[in-house]
Length: 350
Ligand code: DAH
Image (cartoon, rainbow, N blue to C red; front, side):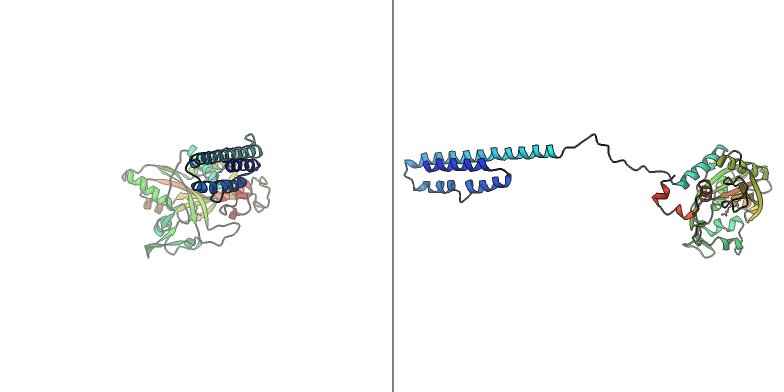
């Protein structure tokens, strides 16, 4: 009994000295484990006489329960201390400013496309979406490019597998291909009396070209098409001059130069007065005072016919422009390759 009392006192004294959880674990093994003095004493109970045994057994149990209770108490005290310690050392300052999230933005070409579409929307043009993957027929033949027309040479194409030998599949080289789809779709609404058309056709185009600061293998275009009765070249000039004034500035001067496209007759390119030098000549306009911004013309009778519009009754004008070029002029960007390289240092400026 005295022995048990000593065991208890020594164990509790040792527990008092314990400072951390590792030491506590060691204490448990030493005081309550298989080789602990208390465990030995309990094993030896069997050697006592029948009168002594119950009393000693009871006491040994009490010592064991006391040590276990002291162990539990010490453990929660150590845990509490550890928690308080980490709460005070790892203070979280919720008033600190957070990490700012980078905001996305519209690609500069998307911005230009939307501006162009909006200006034509004000003039009553609707957006018509046409496919990127085309047939030779729609991209060339129905636009009045005969099979060996030299203009096909200028627009070296990306051909895609599939299609017929005499009508291969390709990525459209210009948005003009959509003109035929649109005219046929409109004409089908009322074949005897096809409705007037006023649309813009924005989209990506593809050409198998040497990449340089001035040309890329993929680029966007906005096509325009107006078809109806009594549409004249005056309508073409008025509409496109109005567009240039809305897109660049209200006082910009424009000029039309005779040109050639297979799908228009007559054809013209439109220039705007160089807004960098005001027309006096600079490196941007190559000292001409003018900047070319689009191709246009009166829709060729063959093209109208291919679209389901009788050229005896209907006429129309069409135009095509390059948003990359418009954007380069507007922001004086020197190299077209910046647009599709996904370089955030460039894109973030818009
Ligand atoms: N498709 C021509 C090109 O890619 C641009 C063009 C010129 C479109 C005259 C037209 C047009 O609709 O009338 O260079």
